[in-house]
Length: 437
Ligand code: GDP
Ligand code: GDP
Image (cartoon, rainbow, N blue to C red; front, top):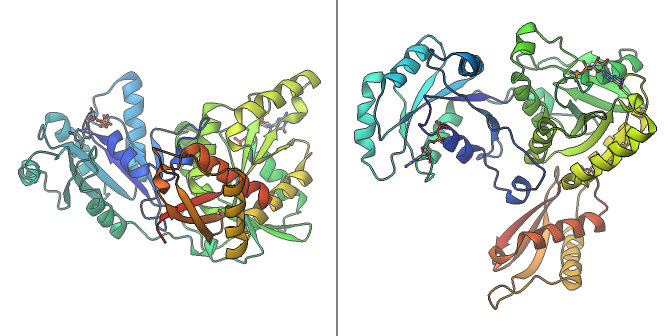
């Protein structure tokens, strides 16, 4: 599954700055969409798009913490213990401190590979700063400036070298007919109930998929003559007590499941609307560019009045993913499942759709004709032609001039125009803008 890298270090050395620099998606449209919230501790680094990994920004770890800080420290340690690689971040301006020494002492007790990241080396002698930490005896040292994005490429290249390859070949080398689904959502929305309901209905045609690594579990099923794989799905696995205690950990599982699916079904609890945690899961689906179906669960428990309220609330809160279909279900009673699977099929078909260059360029021409790009400082950006750039999600490459000046509102307009014209539902749509021919 996706490898896990933990950032460890005392407060103020720049961990969260580094975390942001590494996890920020290039796709600003997606990243800044109103309504998306992101977990500030867990993210996926996609600087190398074919080798994503999960990054955890841990809090204090030094050991003397009490109360809330103590709980954070425990979580940080647990995260570091799960990690494939630890980046020990220190402050190159301040040099080694007693707290750094304490973190090091703890790290020595883990058997994990540790790299030393000497941050804030902008405007100072990086070699001298590294020299300060030579006595730590950590072989791999990197001088970086997270704030100025200096030295990150070298660090990243080395990280990618040592991370285990994605052990998910059996999941990705797949029968094209088989749709990979992940059921995601925060604890208690009903994922296990839904999965067991689906598996129960199939009378166990389900079989564990061999060859998946670690504790990832996938199950293949058939339903109405169609083939599916439920990937890394909560509910297939009995939660261990540790996992329940360190609930944060399901976030890593969720990120992995999203990465490996084609269609993410996010479960919401009809009685609770869209919580911040729900919005965080939605953000992760958007970042990954996955097709999306919203399953509003526990619909059975709602009065007519509540149903109306819920509908209105969801429409408002989910406006930023209004292209996704929302299906009302009851996992408990098994209602709405047929409609759910229909929506999954529609989303999958849209996500995997193949386009021809001619139809894409015609769509661009039609969009520009209906609504030309606005003039910015006396010049209008010129959109010349377009061609398809891939599937899952559907990607369109647009060539032209002065594209940097295209306002976000116009990018959104293009997205909506293409969506309508090609009847794309349930999938994000990406545009890549290329300057010149
Ligand atoms: P954290 O507590 O380890 O997560 O540290 P933060 O990321 O919050 O950073 C602490 C402070 O250091 C902030 O004021 C940052 O702006 C600053 N900082 C972070 N990275 C750099 C850097 O590369 N160079 C400089 N000069 N300052 C930085
Ligand atoms: P998970 O943590 O997302 O896997 O959630 P569970 O499947 O364990 O469900 C959490 C609780 O919600 C359990 O008590 C379920 O019985 C209940 N639940 C799940 N689905 C439904 C539903 O459709 N209607 C109602 N009323 N309760 C449900």
